[in-house]
Length: 200
View 1 (cartoon, helix red, strand yellow):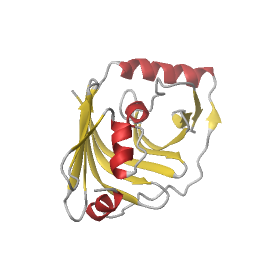
View 2: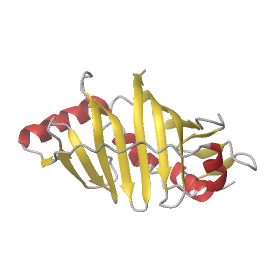
View 3: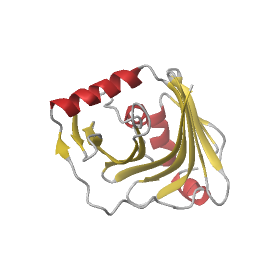
View 4: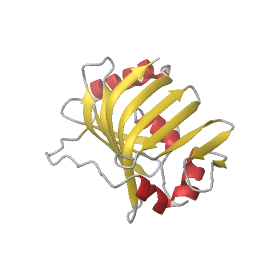
């Protein structure tokens, strides 16, 4: 029921990191102001769907697959499907708690997504903060440092012990939205490659 099952169900397919040099700079007043405008514009957009690929690692084991993430206010549904076996697990819940389906032994429940994933899979997946980071925003969990790339969009957010790198953006959207989000708090890694954004 633990991570070994998920690795079998979701063969490793870790997303390759970009090898091109990454330019990072501390934001000037204009860049910080633009980020604050992005955050205000996206603050009320809490009903969306992300489709793409997800990989996670705890430094020894990991798993990957296609991801469909539905967010509707405080409620979420997070489904990962293995690329070869087609097996999947589904994490869903809200303020009342979380449920994880698709493991041997039947559904598992917990007080929140983070503790449930850690207990059942051995994954450190910061779901609460990731909800903000996936939009390219600072989470409300505490102080955050932010650096910007040559495109004047966030290149890295450091917060709550995690380093979140933004490797690609869809700048055709207004406001721009991330396409590749790599989060790391050694030995844990989460890599998300987004193929589509949909807002309700």
